[in-house]
Image (tube, rainbow, N blue to C red):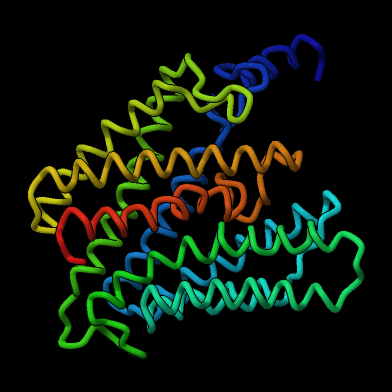
Length: 308
């Protein structure tokens, strides 16, 4: 084929394409992959939550295990080796302890896990022991302890059924409370992404997370309040203002969690904790909002509804 014939063919192949175009938009995600993976995770979590409660706790535990493993690998790459055996043992135990035993058992589980980290590290070499212990307790508090608050409403609702569906086939209020919290977190991420990617011009914390903007935060807040009001009226059967309180609290906690993880990643010199979730990065890149939102929504819901 001569050059005269090659030129039109080349133009046809490149017509409509811009140099460097790819499926990753302004906000830095592969949007189609992110949507598919996000919906799959949401359906799996809600399916377990509403129909097989112990399966939901198992999913929460699996996310916590992957999250802690990512933190472990990131710290190890930077010269800090946390005691993975006691940390992983506590990570597996805490969501189930919260589900079956309640908040007192969860607090005891966190305490026992921290002591186990200290004792485990005390029989190892002295070099780097302080950093190792701090890293272990930090990982326990950041991931499994916080995310275990997503199991607590199921225990408070009188659930804690070992196997099978909810007793009597009736989904308790605690399960709906967790479902609304997850919907609010998804709303925070979705509306914040859509508004921030299109209108974001003023960074919230440019030294920590340059892509997070005040415009995106406003989008998160507006979208979450809308979903919160609807969820409060039609899912929780509570006054509309309960949804507003939960939405504002969720957005504040989710944003703080996102910025906290960004700060940790910047300190460790990594962009994503891993690449296990297409379009999302690592598990911790998805859990960063949930781990902060879970305890805050648990406390807020108890206060505004008087269920404590």
